[in-house]
Length: 178
Image (tube, rainbow, N blue to C red; front, side, top):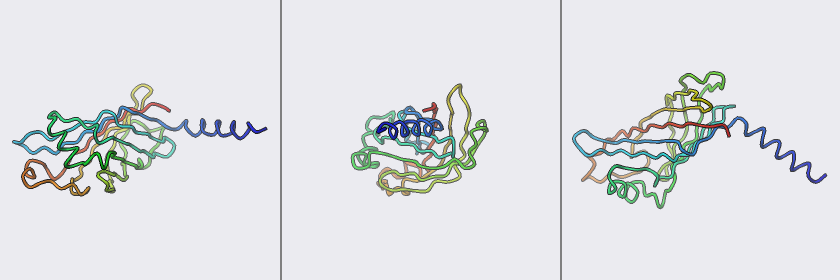
């Protein structure tokens, strides 16, 4: 008799997890380059993301030290001076794909949510997101613009003209059924 609650819990968790798709190898890129100066661009290919196909809820988590630059010194400066990744080790996004319908996956939706980075949270809305099927995976792709100042990141005067105000962020997630 004491096993019935445990069995019920297992059945419920199995049923509830059937509408989740996940990846641990998602990709987020950002670029803040200014023409005629060294490229300010990084990529993180170990982003975890989860999509609830029942309601369109989505969440993503990236370790800040996972961003890779072409220039190792730039990566070091990013982690120590700008992102302060020892103090703020994670970047998070939590949002919703508006009007998401699991039966209509080959289309574009709007994504709205909150991006947390460097200890600050900013609402990001009207992100155009492409949703498609790739075999047994759901592929999500999108991009948006943000600013370093939105997250209280101070760019020193000496390099301010080498970094654009609008930072372009792109993401791609290939999600498998959990």
